Image 1 (cartoon, helix red, strand yellow):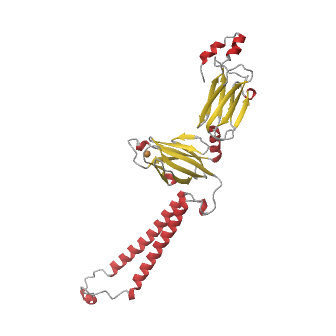
Image 2 (image 1 turned 45 degrees about the vertical axis):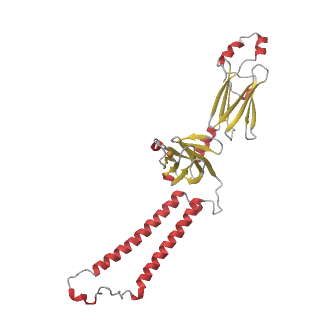
Image 3 (image 1 turned 90 degrees about the vertical axis):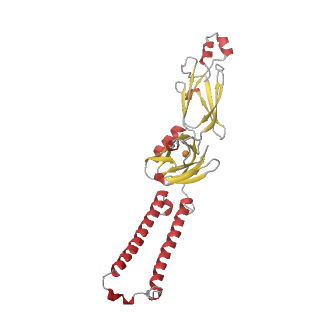
Length: 325
Ligand SMILES: [Cu+2]
């Protein structure tokens, strides 16, 4: 497996295994050698062998010129220094997995805000969610973590993710979930009386399921009604205009079905202007602003244009009671 394919879970799993293996090896050697010497130099009760024992104040002369000492110091130094260098390299990769020049094409970016004992998520396209963070499997996810009130800490134990959430600061980190399913999100900073309930769910989805979910989030449904809540099927066009991007589309009444239209070609959430213009002067125009953070479903009541209704002498005034959408 190439290092650039590693996830944080792989990295920390490997660090743990290497430290466990070397620690066990060193422990076994040291304990075994100690036991061996304890047995070899045990008290046999035979005092006559003790004549060459060192007396108090005498320096030991054994050890063959410090060979053993040199060997044990040397091996320890090699083990410790290689561990330090290797671990440092691994942690540099965790710090920035793109340093090897193999930056993945696909990477999801999510802003995470901890506030008032809940986690708030916002995707790059402006779609928001609370408490549940949905991500596709096998894709690197970058999170920018901050706080809206006090200090929190965003953590997903199963992904080995932990990042400080501090007001005014952004702590960036990443993870890549390999298996679909739900994992727990927790707050790791004692932040107030509801700290323990400051949990959330990481929902790892199949990539196509995630795309379908995201498409659903980026859907707007508009329904035109008259004052009697019956669908209005003709006589208007709807213009949808994003306030921050080039997106601007006009939908004529024949694109509506039974007074309703579902718009699915939206790529960016955020602030939109919705304008409903009468095409035959029969209705009052409507101008609305909506801030899209998820699926939009709006119903507008089209009011009869007064001059038109006067001319028709119709019961248009009824629709006045229909109220604004
Ligand atoms: Cu918290």
